[in-house]
Length: 140
Image (cartoon, rainbow, N blue to C red; front, side, top):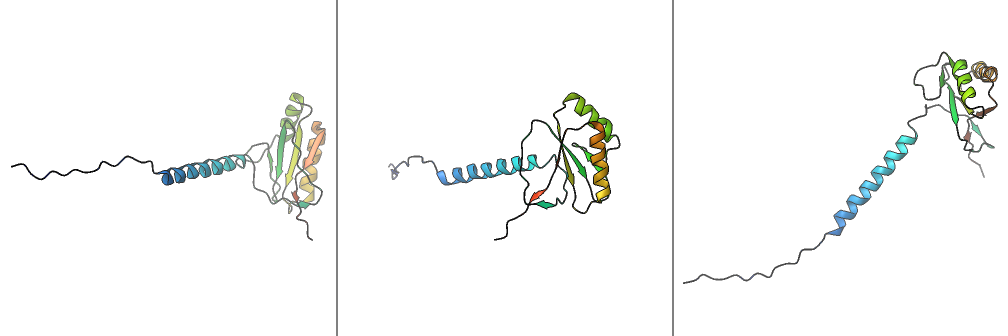
């Protein structure tokens, strides 16, 4: 009269932890890569010369001045060549006399182009000028 009854043992739910760990590691790598990309976003790509005695110093306000191998000068975070570099330097120095200018010149840049930028920095009254280089790998 009555059919066959099936008595199934009810499984307890379990948390599968391996996919959760995979997702967490993926998110960690994603945010690490995104952070590293954001730090390189504000600089131009130049082929810096190497120096064995260069070291990094942190200053409160640093303004990069980039000279490309074709003689174009990029001031601060500009993406196009700057024409009014001296006026902008004077404005920054009047706002903060302790501002540090970092001259980033491609190693194939003409010496004359670098000298012109250094003269412009001197004319504008810059007290702190640094030349950006890459650290030479020690050969042992």
